[in-house]
Length: 486
DNA sequence: CGTGCCGGGGT
DNA sequence: ACCCCGGCACG
Image 1 (spheres, rainbow, N blue to C red):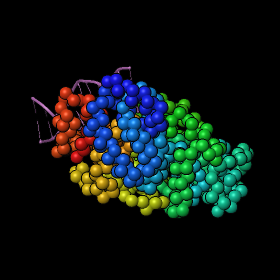
Image 2: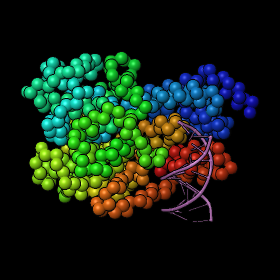
Image 3: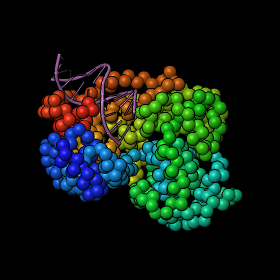
């Protein structure tokens, strides 16, 4: 015991930076060093695999043996390491998402604005359509200005770094399209909530890439003062405050909120932010509006948008009339979409994902039951996961690092560990929603997509109840065992 | 009935 | 973020 503390003390200073995992596993201290430490060192090699940045962290950690428990490192080492990991991971993830996701998802994070910003000309056109004849919002003028002032090529290359905002500039006629596009995009950037999801089918490759880069750049380095508005805009409490403003919209479709434009550009999304859904599981939920018309899978993010879509496309009403008898109402429904999990799925849905011909989503999308959707039907896909995994990453990887997964903070060190993603199922349902009782046949039989029980012995079995403190954290918490995965 | 772990609650 | 646990599905 004494030794324990000694070690503990010393490691404070030395290992602080690196002692990232395990630090807080209070109880396991002494004993833990036996078994797990082996594992951990083992994991190092595995890690180097693709996550070099981690290495130091890990090394430091294992070196110090991390006997130090909670006390000092919690604040120091942990956060340090954790953050590091986090960042790295984040970028990685983002990249991934980028590849697969559609505009819909991207909107969730203000960051896209960065990239989107003037880069997806193809997208412009498309977006236009929904916004015919809209007046550009005054707040968007800077974009307009940009469009006018700069030659196209330049515009693309120009990041949003520093944007003069001429307030009174008017769009001149011939720049219409650009203006529209700009408007849309700006609205995107102004409000994280804002819509204009999917589509942008024609975005050219380079643009996409640039975007991607910008994205990750902005994420990893808010340090560079490059993005003048970046800071302000991003610092907004949280990234994607969940929708909810849709409620407002949709409750009175008839009023047709006149302009999606104006509605979209709600400058203060936060106002609308009242949260009917009590805590939790809302984090990455986004309300979308899905066209229920046969064979039409249009998903838009604004009620008015979808209404317009239905009105014009399906009901054959003139596009310019804003008149609505409310009939559209019957042809769309509100769905809640989990951004995270639908990322991949949606990429299938929409014609988008222009950019990367990136690798297919590694993780099968969770069981969503967006009706009609083209989502990969993954019933029983559990079985595939492992095989997929084995392709992209040695399953051992899961094993090894798993123990820390829970510890590395919920930052999850998950280096692409398929095993874990296995099924956030329930939370990621695209919930067919409320206010429209008549619609959505959704059977929803997928409830119990519970993972078949694994063969592997779990901590409980291996160590027994008495040695509970030797269990992996997950086991201790009654979570899926991270040490002995299947 | 023991076990694994999901979902959710508490701090 | 970390931890705990009720409760349910699985074997």
